[in-house]
Image (cartoon, rainbow, N blue to C red):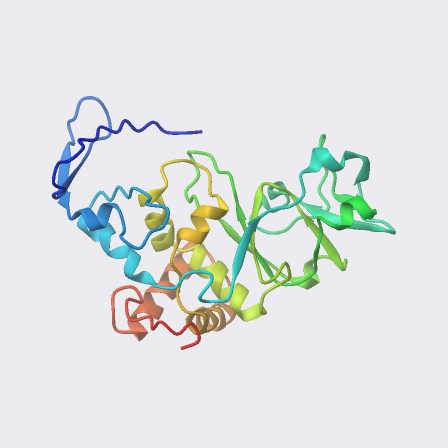
Length: 277
């Protein structure tokens, strides 16, 4: 599930432009190379110092899509708190009295929530006990992002908007293979959650994510490293998404394209520092 990178560094040498070369196989028949400023490879304001590997000049512009961190727009992201094997004594096949639903990524394998869903090795719910309750979250609007994908999947970042009416329960368990966007361990505003999920499912976001992530995992740290539109812009995007009959990939990308056009810039580069404007 990991790719290999060999890094050769020269200490004390002045840093110049960086050459990025690409080819699809060892024949080098389609070999190409592009030179980038060092600031396009390692962002000066990136506390994690991720190495970005763009393959065209077009991709270096993608960070301009937004300038806000999760903190500045008042959101948080965490890994799903339920590690199922540690709560095996609380497993339940169905939702019953004194239980709470437990969501796995396979409950969304069709693109929509299908719960309960039979699985040979996994439960659909957890019995409510003092041990299990502390790992559950209250019902609300959440944006869920799968932590793992296969190399063959079209997108690395796959987000779902979970609404309170999808499950008849006051508490919900999110299994460890999720990343969950939340506010203080509780849900988001409905329109904000819709706008965030739409943004995360866009092709432009996925292309940018692949520039600095060379593996098939999407971790909470990766999502904290991303930059986002302002809170007001996400709310506006959520309103636009609500007016769409369906939200397939083409529709999502058209929404993002039209939304950028409103700001008359390529990719939200005019986002103000104020998260609410």
